[in-house]
Image (cartoon, rainbow, N blue to C red; front, side):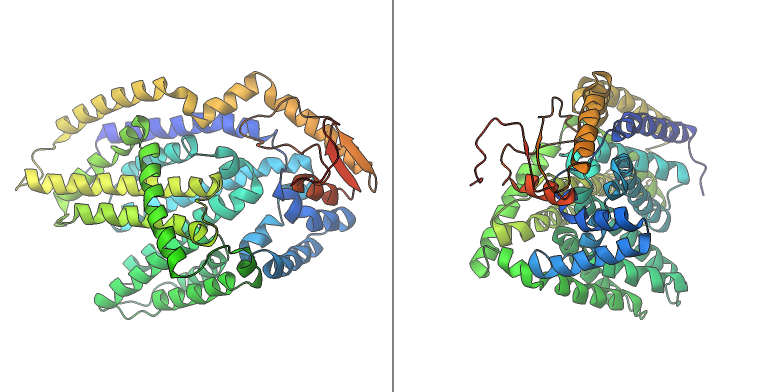
Length: 492
């Protein structure tokens, strides 16, 4: 393998250091994170069991009972419900800090697995190039996601979307490694255990990720069949995923939540999904995002220079990418005529970032083939150094100019001005008040601080607000409301 240019190694180290520096304030503010909204819905039974037994086995049994109840009364996402029932707050308010660690940790792990698997088994990239691409993709996914609260700091919402997406990246990475390593061979027994387990887990997650995986697995099976591969694991994994996904979809409760159905609803959902995709891509294609995606250019040039891959279909790749993003909006549009919450937009953004890098890579390879009939002489080390220097200067200027949009800036701002610490103190006082008031009606003081990354909606002035109701059930209260600023009347 050709020696990696020193500038690539330096850039990789610098990008990793920058990623760590950006994650530092996000991790620091996580210690002020507390459960909100549906954390109390899904965690009430497991919290009650933990407080009475302090034993993990009964807690897991309570989580399984919640899966059974929710499957018949709310939704069929069995594995997601199980995980949501284990939100860290059931072990105490201080433990909720682990939400950010778990969600961000698995997101970074999933991104690394995918970049490493593609870089090693397909593109034959050196480790330094893999690390550089991983760091830049991770920076985009952690700093520019549409709703970092719902994506990284709220266990219930993040577990259902971000964590499932991260598991999907790990699953696809393992599948790719298996396919590339087992050409004409049986393969490592570990794959025969890991892939079916992950398939069964992911089939019980959110329906957007499930639909994406169903499409990708179907494409993999078709391509393997056309290539004459006879290993049964990809087909078996696809069939297992399909069966488990149908079990999730066919939950009796899903039918009750579905407002629309039929072919007309499907067509409407398809049209709206295309329109939403166009709007999303336009919104997400900011200058910092586009500039950072150009890091795929040197990797594409190096790959094109040493391979005979022809890069013949750049438009097809682009339209396939847009189709995949659009498919992610279909489940909620079809059933509820709704494009989805912030947490769904987060995983759609993650997918957009990965596909953006893939399209920049593919288009660069196509241009390389068009420009040079004899690749390998135009883009020499000196040219690469000049490109990287100009690219780094422009990217630095743009990113500094848009600093206020970074998740890290928002975290650092609320740390420095004390908003996060005051918020945590007030929430801790609420917990203490409610834990000492079981069976009673409780009136709580309004929050004076609401950090952007940690809370979106507080409890309401009416005991009949759904957030108030699940909060009261979590702490075994008769009722709970905030202040006394409005009449205690049911919400419409």
